[in-house]
Image (cartoon, rainbow, N blue to C red; front, top):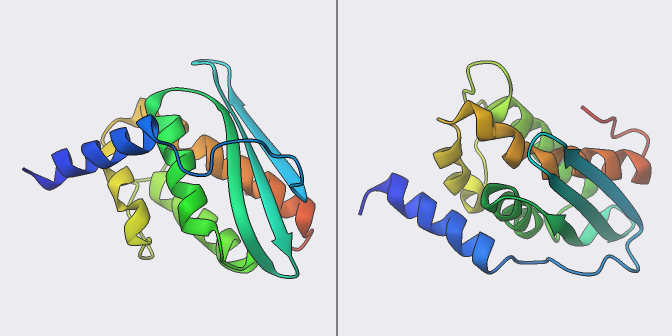
Length: 148
């Protein structure tokens, strides 16, 4: 099995069995993102105290890549600080940005499977929708964490 196929399998698993998907009642803040071109809609809720994100949860509907990306993001960020979450969001925006898509900083291994999507520029928005919602939520939580 190739690495590329393994990454696709990981994405499918996160789509079929999304982690941290559910009700956002009790979230300190909720960020929203939508992509009218394909109908993806995601809300990201941050459950936090102090500087720590106890839990990152999401709800919404979307394509397999959108849901898998939100699931993977929520796993990677739960238990991290707000600052770490904001820094990882910047890394993801650089990695999936409009430029050459070069990965500038290392990403957590839990997000590495998203590299399978990078070769499809039309699907990059599907990955980044949850990260955009996260940036909005982080900014609402702490104005020093400016959105991208």
